[in-house]
Image 1 (tube, rainbow, N blue to C red):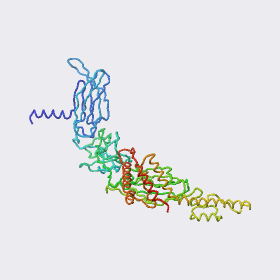
Image 2: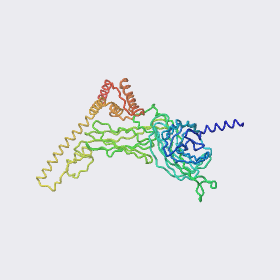
Image 3: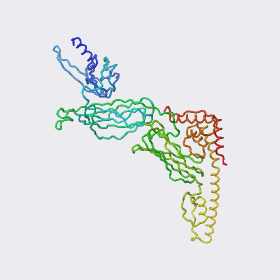
Image 4: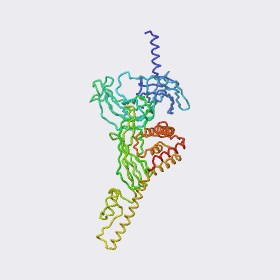
Length: 563
């Protein structure tokens, strides 16, 4: 190589590193001669001062992130120049910096304010390398099982520390922020393993782990974690670690993992079902009730349990029972993400306002299977429900069965209903008291018969109650707006004596006028889509066609006539 070529090469290298640059009273020095992406390095400012005045530094970083600032003190140098003593004072301030990617980074608009002076410095160019010149002794890395996910699909992300030298201490300096994800933290597992990475043997230990659920489609990023690691230098006499008698020199380093880009796919619109739970991945559902027979105004407690790997925090709670005389009083939930598998329990509480009965039916709840790329339905048995009048105790055991009339009344209800009022023993009463007891029993028996007729009348007129509920539900829709659940409940009244697994499919099979059928199916699909879309949580307003809703009410009336 010619002399001129060597000079040009030297100039190019100096410019590419930008290590020591000078300005008027300010020197900027990049301490690490080979800065690597993801590893902390320092930029040192030396500022000429005359006394103890403060120095205020400002600059614009480009392609790097400033982690911290350290005041390294005051440097005083004394020298003889032309027989005179000259003293040079320099304030030294260092900035800890890290780059997330290789390439060229800059420090621009550098200014230092000292006393009443403002010192300016030219921009500083820093070359960031992809790998260190020698094998890395310690680094941190994020690892995940897959990088292509569906909205709502869970993935475990684990951050591991790899090291080939003794690590004295580790500290998480900055936790990752996961924008666009629902996050669950895991407990850390401290077990170390020995692995082969890039042809070298490393110790590997988990420092942080999290389960993530993407909440929107598109490109999302797994953010880096920043660790502060104290480690010892490796002794050449000992192949792994320092000498057992002479500890190696200790170093402190800030490590940053690489950012990972993932692709999030939207859930398919084709085949989008009703009763979609919002869960992705295989799930099991179980429904249970404390008993099947209740008194009017007695609390009816129902429990739904969902188990699986999905985002149970966002489980869409389904409606279980529908009846005009049934009021949903309270719904609570309990989430346990530490269990294997995680589960969520939903507790429903209803109150029956009058006597009625609901038959057993099948309820189909759906989740999305990302492997099959389709929606899968799980059939859940909804148990039957009987609510009796307030004067009776369901399945109660009377304390006195001597009264024959009491037994006869109970037989009329299959032995399931006893009179609540206590009956007195005849052996401890006088003749007058005995007559009083008999009169009381006859009176209660008469009241019981009246209540029985009232119960039978309500059961016979239950169909008209359905029509009344349809009208009340339509009034609620007009006053407070329409939702998917309200429309679903209204359309379900068209099928009084039929188990409905797929409401849209059943409507298609009916002989409802095609124009009416098309209107309500389209409206149902729009409400379904808006309920589960990720665009906005704000409910959209839908303009109602009053004529078509009145036609629907007439059809419900005709289909539910008592013959």
